[in-house]
Amino acid sequence: MQIQEIKTLISRKNKKRIGRGGKRGTTSGKGQKGQRARSGHRIRPAERDIFSKFPKLRGVKNKSLAKKPLALNLGDIEKKFSGEKSITKDTLKKFGLIKSTSVSIKILATGEIKTPFIVEGMSVSESARKKIEAAGGSVK
Image (cartoon, rainbow, N blue to C red):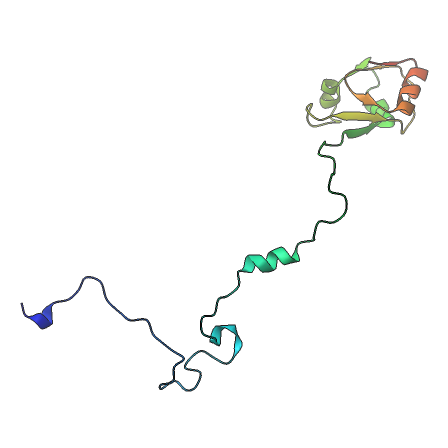
């Protein structure tokens, strides 16, 4: 083995230095003007542009974190529950008015009611309570 036959395991290639004259013209492969043509240029992160496009939070800062209850109308309940005596979250799920029993429910007074029934475990608006009690039912 001779000295000119020795090779390194890692290739040692120097970084190409451009923009200092030479055979590539005045711009030396960097194009014209602009941020990328300058020495020591740093491209600004795209996240900064994205953040600037978001709407700025103004106005009331203390919005309620509580979830609003699911509203059910008396007219819809009257159509589905013709033969039932008591209405609970389980019976509402059974008849397909709600998908889950974990949601909070409030019964509103839209619609007419003729059959008496008992409402259990749900909040009821004041006018809906009057209509239920006028039909002969009750709210627990």
